[in-house]
Image 1 (cartoon, rainbow, N blue to C red):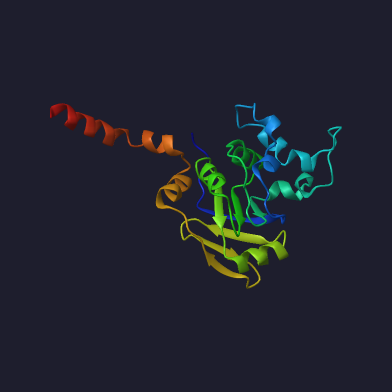
Image 2 (cartoon, rainbow, N blue to C red):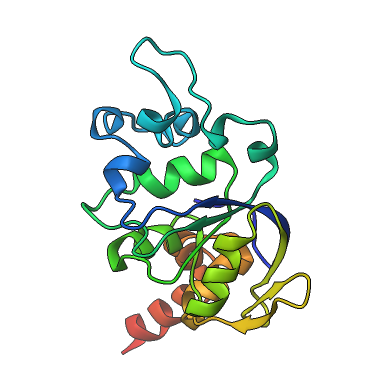
Length: 195
């Protein structure tokens, strides 16, 4: 599978300040029967965005401005709860490329990295600045592993393993990486067959 590579993203942020946003809030379980990623964005935070009769609420995710945001700032402990790849699928289908928080649940982080969504655990002071300044334009530079905040908000380093960084910058998942190694695999197999 491939997705749009991430090297540097400059975007306004959408802020969801609540702590402990879990994967069932991000993608309610009743939508897990969908097997394709396309169209999942309409169900992102479904119970926050829609009334029981299907009409839209006034949630900021329903605003026109939100559609242009590629960076989501979540409250502390974002993505906790059960494991479901549908959560990062819905976030990327909606248009997000980056999720930042002071803490991101490990399983959600792993699912995100495998599906083209960059999860960033950022310094608590920077996280608070982002929560206090919604809709600011922020730059995420994956090459230098830096988040640059505007208005002298500072520059903050973040950590990501080299393999995930490589895959995100190339726009490939693990299978795409292996497929890109076919020449090396053929060489190895030829050597192995001779022995």
